Image (tube, rainbow, N blue to C red; front, side):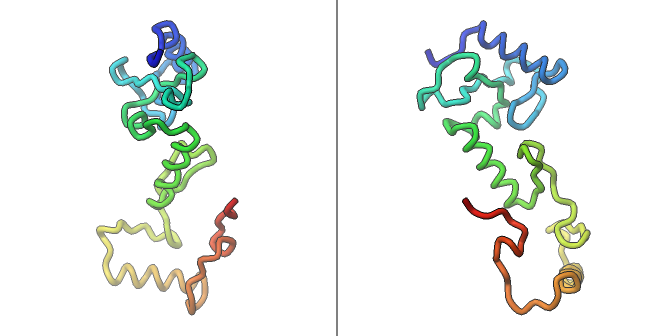
Length: 151
């Protein structure tokens, strides 16, 4: 059976309510869901990959997260989402779910890309050089850039 039974859905909704102080929230992004029509009962281990329609394999997602997740394993989906957010310039906390936009990409200069002018760019570059020293080459070394090693 591909779909979850009503008793499994009821139990998952009840657990979600308890976990989120009386609110129903997406297990991935935390968005509050206001009605059953907004809830997608998702197989944590994809049904297409052998996941069973049992309570321990069921989670509530919003439609956006469920459609993005597709039939990926949850861990793979979260890594993909975390990587996308990181590449967009966001700061990601340890669990990867609470993603905050970095206010301050270079030395506390908060400039939106659409507002970029030559003067603002020159200030950013000058500030970067003052902090890092004269730039003679670009260093993509993972340690230099405080990035974790690739495993």
